[in-house]
Length: 241
Image 1 (tube, one colour):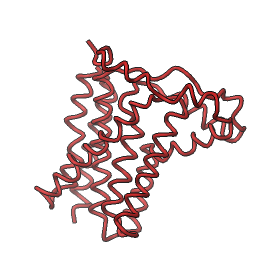
Image 2 (cartoon, rainbow, N blue to C red; image 1 turned 180 degrees about the horizontal axis):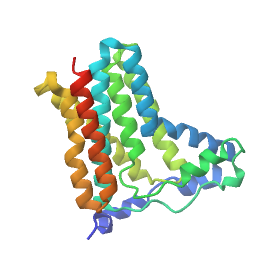
Image 3 (cartoon, helix red, strand yellow; image 1 turned 180 degrees about the vertical axis):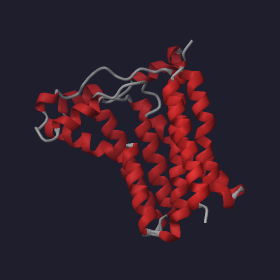
Image 4 (cartoon, helix red, strand yellow; image 1 turned 60 degrees about the vertical axis):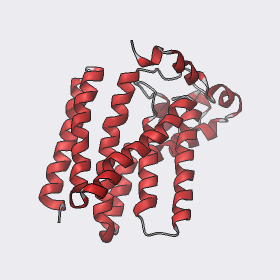
């Protein structure tokens, strides 16, 4: 029996989709499709790549965050296919109401497939922006964490506004992202500081196996495993020093 069929799962019906359906104008829906990219894995990759390039003194930490993101990817995908909670079916705004330039992006965003719990975007945003708040030498610690909270809140709200997640999904994504940070970033730094990036990259490998057991998705499991393995080898050969 999938966990989504347990009585506790009825809480997933609590969300903002019905409310947003009444108040969200088309241009705002298009804006949500833009802002939700802040929690997408492609954006994480580009942002961390720029940080790695522009901040040589923080390269090990930035590489560690990317390793954490791979581990987090395996973690939330495994959870999704273990719990098997469906996404909402209501579309808050009809695509025809979204301005032309934003409509393709909006249509792509609301077409999100797969299971909904926990939110992958909320997970990714949490581990990315909290992680950057920890490692970046910009502003004060309070300012960095306040900024992280704004970005995470923006991504979470965008997922609700687009109708692709319920409230519980995005709320669960936040502790999932924090758990990924603890497992793949903080713990390796405490107990294996010279190997923390390697530990993080390797973390995705067992989750690839767990994902396969949970979903039977051999292709995605192999993709996860290969991604982690390639990153591990590249770091060992070119990045460890």
